[in-house]
Length: 640
Ligand code: ADP
Ligand code: MG
Figure 1 (spheres, rainbow, N blue to C red):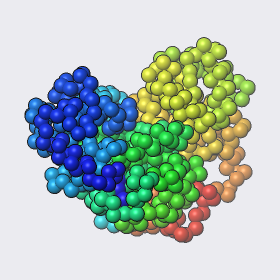
Figure 2: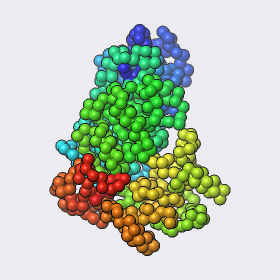
Figure 3: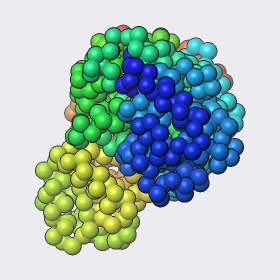
Figure 4: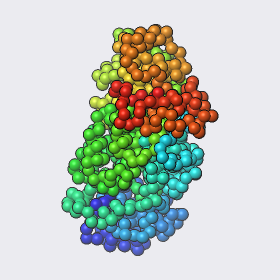
């Protein structure tokens, strides 16, 4: 039972390791050593302390790595970096024990100085690769006045700076390298909550910095605690001594995400924050070669990012055991349920070997908090803190929202007009309802001479990645997308979001327009509306009013008609203070919200209603969990 690989039950690795540590001139020679290409013998190793972390390959692997490592062992006298004293020994060991497909973890775990809280040596090349990507252009300074509410027993106080909390040398170093100068609102609250080992249910929209909000404190705890029980398991005490079992990985932390793209984004962030640590992140997702993912897992996996379906597959193949998974994160939980992943999620969390809730630490993130998510939270979380992060987007003046009446037959020509008006260079995201519609529209635009690409569920993994890249880089500044395919993607700097087809629910609308005008940037969202969209009329009207947008008079009269036709709807107003959700455990008038907040305003994100004052009264009014969910289908997470 190990999260690292046991491949050498006879202890040969210990012997090799000893050689590694003692020999100062062993380049290319000695027991079982591999040939080291000349270009790796001195240059890279002596410059960086350690050789070739192969990022293309997803981590430590391949012959190049081995070579560099061996040469590292051979020139430990040469690189006297700050980290050298402790690095020389443990790095050499680490390669064998933790990060090599052919290594054994035993002796690594036995070593006394294998302190996970200490950074391993820096590597310039890796560093450049991980951290060279510029900032996304999001101005988080302007995000500061977004209100955040934390509810639940004994909620730890929030931080204002990353330095307000001790996350250890490795995490702090990587925050600096990432050029994160200050925490985003969700990070200010979530980091201390997670660091104090509390379960968390957080509602925050895309782009608010959720990834780091859970990765930083989780990794910080893993670095502090080391491999723990898992290292005992690694010694073969478990049930996994069979030929296949030996290759089973036992991650310490699992992040579940709905889509491949999102999983990859989280994985990329994880690699940044795992830089110079002993934690090896891995990612598995459907639609890609499973053999390759298995081979990567076998190199060691401490933090696993996964889509639910592929993870179940890996578990059933005996490649992953969750026995030591002490940290569970469900990212974009509402989207995972929308996509029908609930059975797989329950299979992973409840019907296998994962430590039960209360034993593990569980964090759920969701943009919305409908009934299904509340149930999941009840089942997966223990005595959790509920965090509601104010919305940017719908309530922000950053986005100009336009709704225009366009008949289906006119949509294409209208779109061309819009594209011509916005200019060729600005990134435009066009949402359509179906995969077929996406293909058709892409073809049409292509034939009209527009550089465009598309992304939807039927595209191969490769195609989707390529499309995203083309879009982000500006080579194809028009991206046609279906909602599911675009979910959770960090596509920043989108100038214009066009709802070629409007969604049928307002939550999806808010998600979509959140792609533009992300904090600090101005954006434009244009929606084509016709008879087919009458079901969203009232909600759309509310949202436009809330965000102080121009409301077309036809929409107003439509909404009026609509309301009189269907008076069954329980909600009168959707918004309160710009929050995306409410902690359903709070009962109206409990005073938890309003007591300390009377003086605080909305801080100018267009709420119209005072955040503090309106809170206690204007409250989401279900009578707690298990009571009746009066709103058919979904809870009114906008808070009324
Ligand atoms: P979410 O998961 O809420 O959609 P992400 O975690 O993807 O948001 O973050 C959005 C972008 O903001 C990413 O490019 C991320 O690197 C960046 N980011 C996150 N936190 C900070 C911070 N504290 N300072 C600067 N940039 C940040
Ligand atoms: Mg995210």
